Length: 364
Image (cartoon, rainbow, N blue to C red):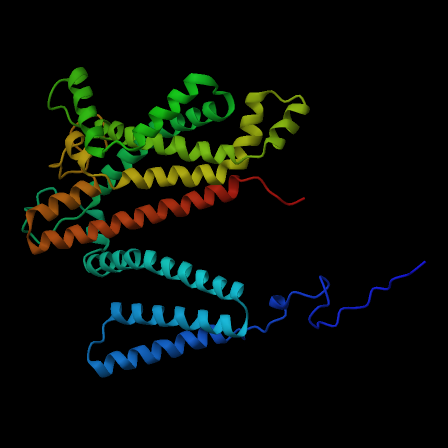
């Protein structure tokens, strides 16, 4: 009878399958190597561009990114291993794409801020254009702020209940052909151009109230046509993310389905639903074409009545000022654009507070 003993692997060739994977025993680059290499590459590229007399920010950014990507990948492949080199290459590409996505956003914000901050003051926000001629260095945007808030709020009151109830039906109750049909029409409505929504409401208003009857309520209905599908799709996705085990646990305790939805499903998904609703509001608060057709574009006085007379909004105010073409009109347009961005930012801040306070507490 023979006995065999397993000798420990020495790492020499021919030791068999017990040998360790050498790719896992390679070195690693220091933590400071990547930022130091980026700084060095940026300095070298800047120096070369200055010497050649062709320095420009886009050319500098492209040269720095390309050179850094090549050098960090080669250094990682030389010191570490191929897998780590690929990881660093993909990481660099991801960060580069993120930077490219941020460039137009930051450029837009900086342009609006620099052009609009000069005229944005308490006077501009607290007076209307009533009695102000287009070339006068006076007037403000208060009537447009009132119209934007009133129209958007009324559109939200129409869209949020309809959209949320539709999403609940599709996730919790919908079955068969009806569910597929609703999903199909929601997807189609998501791609409807805003001008088509405005024309639809104009035709609807003419049927009920006669031609030429434009007011804020018509504008709110036009915005709700654009807002409802966004609320439906975003709310549906958030409701689908709620674990099925939570529903089953509630049913096991004898809680009826409608109460499970109200007490379990909706509170669990409230943060995502709130974000989706805010995205829908941001989608419609800057619309111009449907409001020009439905709410009018010549209102200069403050009007709180959605059902009586034309109502100005910030996007239409910006459009009307730019169309006039004078320097003072452009100043008002930039200041109104900055006001609109600030309103959207404020709405997102309020939405975050709502989702934070109403979301279920995860602590034990």
